[in-house]
Image (tube, rainbow, N blue to C red; front, side, top):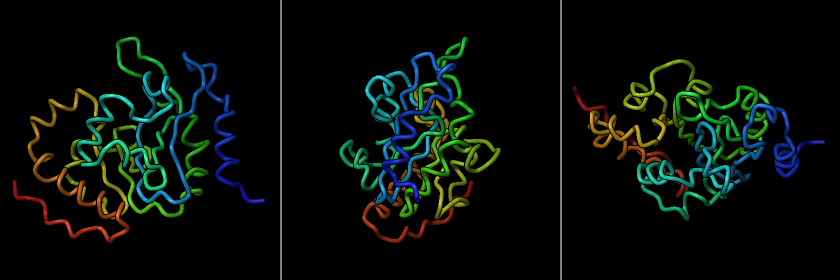
Length: 205
């Protein structure tokens, strides 16, 4: 008997695979539907997301929504946008500060099964180093973001939208002048059910 989306979500919510390693305990956070056309593949929930059960419900989400050019209502419309991190639960803090990487057990256990339930995904925003390493392989986040045309029409790589990225944005004007207009055009096209736009060649250095 084929697995349904509800069967899968019930299994995910009951998962205890990483429980011994999670300081706040398991609380998988994802937003999916059979009709979603745009997927945001990110890293792992932070503490606020763990508390609220809503992905990107923090300052990084505000930054990401600004990059995409959409409002909160559109962002959380799971009939059109799916939000699936590499690690579904909050992984804890590193001793030197910052969140731990996504638990390595999570994506191999769940990601393929989640993707099988979303047949209409047309574009995946690959957000941050951990998502990019899992989906695209080894590489530098900043270089991938500026070379986004190479990954279209299936993927659009982005940096993680943390406060630290603000300094990189200021040092990298092409992100604002070249990457973000293309990102917004692609997002709007996918959400409207239209073909991806023709993206102009990269500007000469």
